[in-house]
Image (cartoon, rainbow, N blue to C red; front, side, top):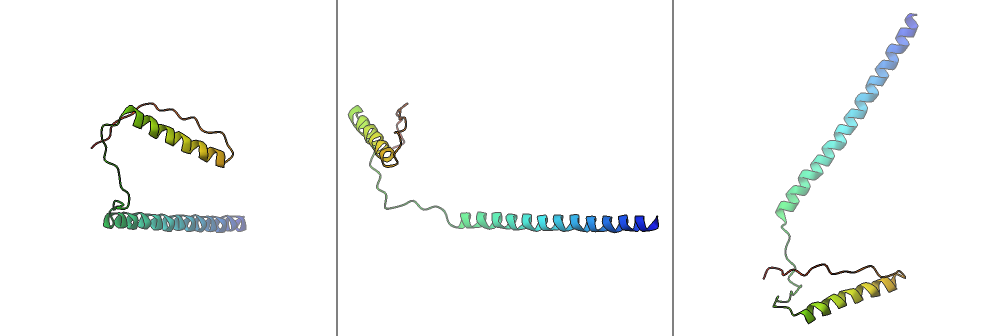
Length: 103
């Protein structure tokens, strides 16, 4: 009977060692992920996003309905060309509202 209890004790010891190893490895992985998060935040703070000077934005003026319709038609035509290139039906395109941006 004592051999049985010694085997159970040995199995319990190995089970506990296995669980400790698992939790230690999980702790190491968690620490690495936390370090990456801290490093990422420091890099994001050091390098603010710079606006792209190459992009020229047109000055917003009082757009007429014809200009809005022309831009809408151009966007729809581009979507149709992409759909034709990919051999699929063009996606549904519906203008819900036009909102003025800040000047």
